[in-house]
Length: 222
Image (cartoon, rainbow, N blue to C red; front, side, top):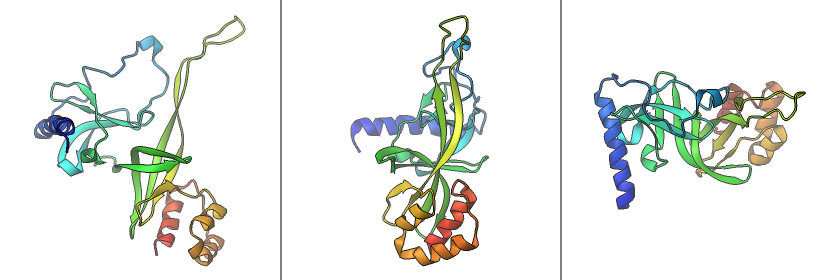
């Protein structure tokens, strides 16, 4: 571990550790905010998965802190002992973040999305026999529209939640988008063609349903 990375880890670990020792008495708001926006210019909607900070456990360093996940920016914010809000660096030491109260487990990993390699957080939706199903919650941002004539309406900027994207990691550790239909599923798992076709003929599944994809993962992981 390099000196710079080590110092970052120590600083963040210290902040998280102090919060853990505060027995949950830390306030759930920050006195500092990244890129503050005036109230009148504030976008509608929210970039956060959960707006409020909640207690989370950072598994690898065994520390707890009040955190929240910025879905749009794909980053975590946490509260320091001085009640400042800071962004958590994407380091391996902070690769597993678990929110106990809402039962959400995030993992930091490299995955392929639309043929692009991404290094970010995904939610663990299901694990079985070396396979993992992940979920990525998505938020779109629409810029403000200023009316140019009296016949047009001005529209404020807006964050909008859109459909989730699902990924799966195979036993070799490669993580890619989960197949979005029967044809893509058979192409991804040709060796299980007979079992998949039989299963799909007996079960009406929605490839956008987390529960249904968990059933498919159970089949694939046999």
